[in-house]
Length: 214
Image (tube, rainbow, N blue to C red; front, top):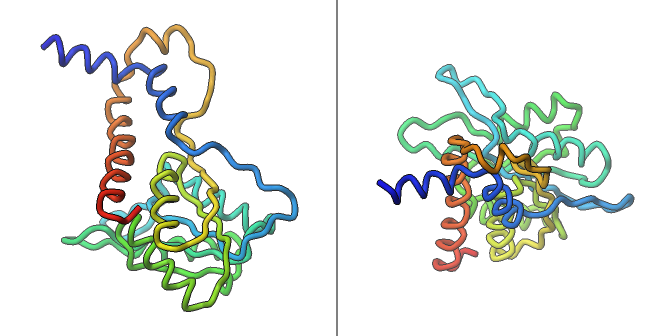
């Protein structure tokens, strides 16, 4: 019981969580004026579907927002949206197809959008994106767009797959902000779930490294 209480107190401390996550996640990137990439590769995982198969953006929708901005500001010429459905029993609609329609609605021409809608995880994102890039004879370097906490794993996987990518992290759930005394002393139970997301990334990276995928 004492051990459980100590672990709960430790992992519900906002100060410790913020320090760990800011050290783990990829730092923000500012692109210089005139910088241009032939393709921005945006990873799925920011859309959900209801029982009527209607699509909605999730809390990670900043990936979409940053991709849209990068195109309109001229930093990327084309967009590869990679992401299918990871549900095996009740497959959802393809996320890439949903996002493509939303990108078109935001004013991006259809001929600038390439979708890869078969991948179910980060490794397949990389492998299938490589096939698309090779088939279209597109040359790098390419810009990889995903969540800041997901970027360390994604970078290694994409580079291992032979794709020359630069990082453009988005969707910062933790920023290097001031911490109040309340944040240090008062436990935040929500963090117990948030730690699970971080451990998923760390363990996922280690597994990919052990299996030669990263």
